[in-house]
Structures are given as C-alpha cells and as structure tokens.
Length: 510
Image (tube, rainbow, N blue to C red):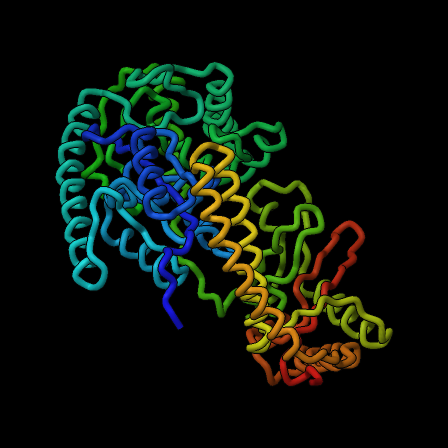
C-alpha cells in the first residue's frame, strides 16, 4: 500500500508561562503568537479551550504551583485523547525541574501518546534528540538553582530587617505589592477572640474549633476551622508584630531546626500583645504531646471504612479502647465531628452497631429481594476494540468542530479549512468501515441471573463474620466485596446498606 503523502491533521495544545525571576521572557501574548504560527505551518489545530496560559508569573520548579499546567495535565488524561501534542515556546516554560520534566514528559509521551514540542529549540528525533533535550533542561535547572541561591540571600536579609515575606495570615492583608501587612479589622477580632478564649477561658483547641464553626466564622481561605488551622494561629508570632522566617522548607514543607529560624521585630502592626502570645505559646507547649501513630493492625475493625455519617457523609473513624480487665472494644465517631466540621454526633459502640449490621445482612437474605449495583468486568478484546473505535470517532467529531472553530475564529484560512476537512473525511471513512466490520463479528451476549449469586455472596460473608477463624482484615475484605458503604443514622439508630455485585467473566454466559 502506498504511503500517505500528506501529513494528517493533529490537534494541539499551547502552554504559556512567564517566570517570576525577571528573566528576558517573551510576553505571554508573543509566546502564544509564535506557537500559533508554528502550529499553522505544521498542520496542527489549536482550539481556544486547549490554550493554557498562567495568569501571572509562575516559577517552573514545582508543577503543583501552576494551576493552568495542572489543568492541562488533567485534560490530557481524559478520554478520548483531547490533543496530540503540547507546544511551548521553550522547554524551560514546561518545567525548570528536570525530575518533574522527565516525569510529566514520560507520562505524556509513553502513556498518553502526547508529545511535548519546543518551537524555538528544535531537536532531532530519536535518542540523540532526547539527549540534547535533557542537556537543555539541565542548563535551565542549573540557572534556576543559582538564581534561587541569590533570592534566598535577599530574603534572609529582608527578614533580618523586619520585612514580611509570607502570605498574610487571618487578620492581615497586603494593600499593594511589596507593602507591609495591614490589619483587617473584622478578621482581627476573630484572632483576638481565639487567643482570649484559649489563654483566659482555658478552652481546648477542639472546643474552640467547634465554637468558631458554630458561629459560621471562616479561615483566611474561606474554609471551616480545623484543629491544625487553630494550631497555626496560636503559634504564629506575626500576630504579636514579630517576623518569623525560614521555619519550613518550601520544597517539602518540613519544619526546620529552630536554630535555622530568623526572628525580628516586624514593620507591620500587632493584633495582640507579646505577653498574650507568650502565654498561649506556654500553654500549647505544656499541653502538646506528640503521639506516635498506632499500627493499622491495632485500630482496624472489620467495619472500618464502611460506616458513613448520615449527616455529612464522612467516614466514621474507629477507635480501639482497652478495658481494665485486658479486653478491648471499638467505638466509632464521624470524622467530621471529631474535626469540628460536622454538628451531628454519630458516636456508636461496637456492641450496638455490629448486631445491627449482621441483622441487616441476615434480613436481606431472608427477604430474597435486594437492591444492588452491578459492577461489570473489563470488556473482552473485541469489546475493547469496539470501544476504541467509538472513542476515535467521537474524537474525530471534536476535531471536525475544532477545525471549523479555527476557521471561524480567523486562525485558519478557507483553503486550510477545506484541506483539513478532506483529511478528516478520509479518517472518518476508514474508522466507520472498521466499525461496521467489527459489529458484524460480534455476537449478542446473554446475561446470567444475578439475584441468586448476590444472595449466595451475602450468605458467605455472614459465615465469615460469625466465624473466629478469620482475622479483622479478612472480615473487612469479605464485607467490602459485597458492600460499598453503610450509612448510619444515630437519631433513629437505623442503617442503610449499599450492596454491589462484582461480575467476573466466568459468571457470564456466552
């Protein structure tokens, strides 16, 4: 068969980023213009929804700090594949961290079939081209590392002089770029109330969390208060007018040794007195006791992970309690209630909840009528092929619309649009012919009656739960093989069990 002489039309994406380091970047608009020009000459259509542009200067060292980059990666993972390649002005726009660059490019190229192309740094195909690309990335990372050292020295000097360089906490705002934080009066009142009730009223952090949330108060990020958010406030010297810098490592968020911290009197106004802050710090340090995490084997019950709060939907956490006689028993409570984020108390003991669950399983078997979800197995090979071709046709429909949009938006000329339509029409004819042939080869599949198997599975699980020959883990796994969740309502002491039946290829009649 003769090879196709014309290059097939591809759908692309554009990623645009400007650095925060003041280097000589093209403007975002200029980068995008260059990318669109390159796409035109290489038979690539880039629809508007595939243009990912960071709204402000963003460092390329950490992908998690680039929302548009994360959106682009998430879009790339969708099915059918939304685009065939990602165009950037330079490889350094994609990432300045070689480890992250290798990870994301490997995922895109090997798993998703999406190439990453630098329009201003052409490299050869094959291993030699990949080597050149890695050298370019290493140079970019080396430049970024040296720049970071210079920035760190500058930030250390500013912190020593009392300059504030962090995101302002609850109670403060930055009025303009490089300005010292100023007080937000209504938020400052919340901060004062927190310190007053913690120091003077001796409220616990847990009780204080519930109290703040009951009043409908929010954190600086507009979220409900949690234990950790109050701990951060109570330990933050900024509220006493003190600048603290270099407490955590920005890369890992790990707390550094206290000898590496920098403290200085800040230029911003204080919300509370230093005396009140020190009193709060003294109480916190005297009460706080770091606890080693308990092994999962100790705390896990066979109902763990399945019980859900009827009010907020969160999981009921299990807690093992030890009696004086040496025996143990379990209790369950809504995780949201423990964090002060759910108002409904769902505390229940093992003694009450276990018989209720076993009775529900037994009643389901006795009734013979059970509502359940059917979870089907992975399709057979011919079904996979049918699904693949169907997805390709759906993607082709999107390509046709994008080609039309590119023409309507003035990105492509009429001649280019006509040429793209011809290419897409040939692709559609080929896919539809394959689909028609595959459909004729398929046979109708008769489904086996499921109700009897569902009841049989429940009986088996009941036997396992009532037996002493199985561990908590084995019982938990058995119950999770037929139940997705158990919703518990403490007011009525009622539970709703959500069953499912996992089909296996062996249970399907051909």
